[in-house]
Length: 184
Image 1: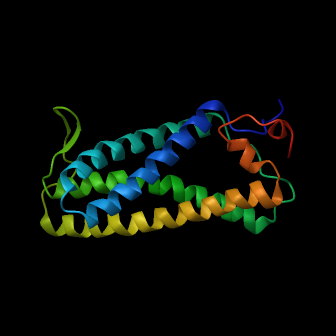
Image 2: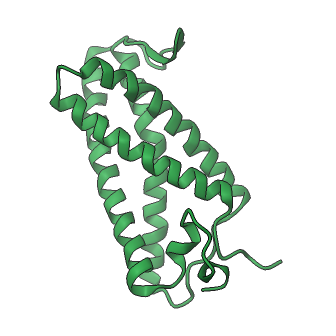
């Protein structure tokens, strides 16, 4: 069986949906820190979106396990292959860690995590103000790391799409390209 040269539909849908959600979450997080006036509204958006990102990240991992990504171009230097692999591990790790650390942080503060309406997640840690403070700092550090990895990912996508033109970008593009059918 010949391996596909593009990601399957669910992978592309999850990728681009999560790209919008993760960027929105980063901006909401920055706005939460910068604005006291809209804090309650922003938090009310931030919590369920974080949980949605967690669920979608798990679905992405399941899809990726069942339908492996297309191979990278054969002429890609080994250090770039390793960097691509490491950055994807970091992206998935952070997409899983950020919501879990946020949930743990709120649990340690005994702040309920409302999902929708009256549905509230159970705490995953006991109340501990010092642990809350440490997890809040970790959540912030992870957010900066996620932002950095996203910028790196965007730079690599632009490198593949505009300079190398090797089909890597078109393999995940939300549209179907004639080039993606056999460009590697």
